[in-house]
Image 1 (cartoon, helix red, strand yellow):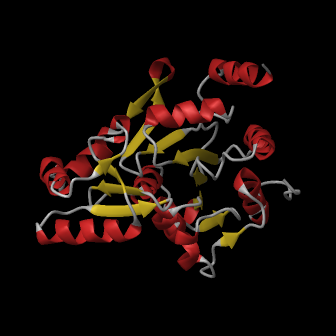
Image 2: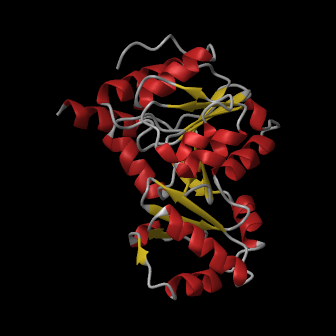
Length: 265
């Protein structure tokens, strides 16, 4: 009952908008990064309520925007200022009427070199196991499979002369995107739009579809539950927290002077 009340209260709030000029952007994955521990998630809600006015909070998720909103509500997590969804192939911003609107400029950028039908035909020839229908997007085709299968798909698309990115994550998901897409690309696009660059961005994530964003951002945080597929990033100036899930994110923010030092969670 308490959780249901918290979700309803969160839905009643006006969409948070930056109160002053944005100086930094925190872009965090959702699943396994902000979710996974109810106590840590509640602490993240407290941090969000007290965060610096100049810090824009974005989620950068593999999920579609509708599914991202559902998971955030289920966990009573704060509504972001910005949604980067579908593995960085869509950007959504709040607009009039407290509604989310897709960024048409980013969409046009991805459309420039993306032949979805041709890419889908190559994938279909492999008799794929598709992810759920709601995860198939205009700029994302999603399958189930291993990293080795993802590498095979990448080779086949290259032989067909099709520009695309193939991203393996969580040991079971494969996402095929336009070459210009990805979480790092979407974050760079948004930062540039606000007069910033990736040096002003903080990324937090735990799986392979976070890798480009973690590697490119000015500061990055790995919670201790991060997947082994991100092992190649360790020791590259990326902060590896000893805490799980959202507690690890708060710990990383504390190292940057943006939160109180994390306690065990």
